[in-house]
Structure formats: C-alpha cells, structure tokens
Length: 146
Image (cartoon, rainbow, N blue to C red; front, top):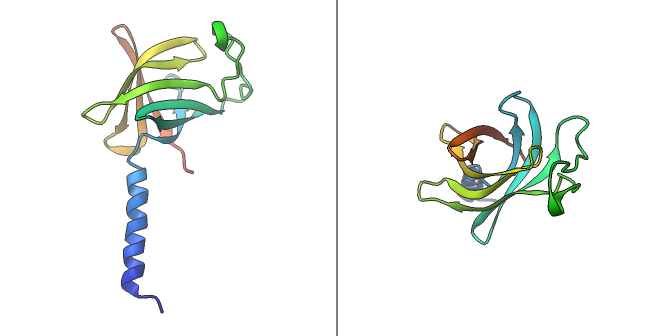
C-alpha cells in the first residue's frame, strides 16, 4: 500500500515543476499581430549556451503556411519562413528581461534590437518589444501548451 504522505509529496513536487516551467520565457508562443489582433505564428524560444534564440515553428495565417522570405536579401532570400531563426543571442538582464540585437521580421526583412519579458500579471503572456532607433513596437505573445 502506498503511503499517502509519499503521494502528497510527489504531487506537490510535480505541480511545483509545472509552475516553474510556466514562469520561463522558454517554450512555444503564439504571436499576435499588434495591429490586427490576429494570430500569425508559433515561435519556439530556446536557450543555447546561456543565450535566447527563437525559431518559427508554424505559420497560422491561412494561405501563408508555406511562405518564403520574399523581401530578404542574401542567403535568406527565398528561404522558407518556417524553421527560420528570428531571434538570436538574447542575454538575460538582472531584472529578468532578455535583450539583444537580432529580432528579425521576415515580412519586412528587417532586424531590430529587442527586449523580451514575461507579463508580471500573467506568466502566459510574453511581451516582445522591437526597437528601431528610438521607435519601438510591443507585441503580446500567448503561451502554447505542449
């Protein structure tokens, strides 16, 4: 017979791990167009060598699922957007934000400086801000379940 205390401690541990995972910027996020409010894609944010990277996992816009980078130049021209690395080399700051110099928008073929952080009021929302000189735009991405 299983000891109830062992079951309780095990459940508490598993719930704690899930809560910690939900506190991270890493994982899969649904991008939401800040102008239209419509979902655009799924981005998988991972950590490599202590830095933040993001890849396009899926395009959600109807008719654009197999889109290629038309406006891109060089080696990215004509490359599929799905699988493209759009965030590179983000570094964590002391206040828990991630900042870097490479947030790539394949639709505009433009690269921005960025800041990424979890919404303090909702850990299932990721704030993604792209900077061009002194101008910026912020999008809210929504966590996607496993």
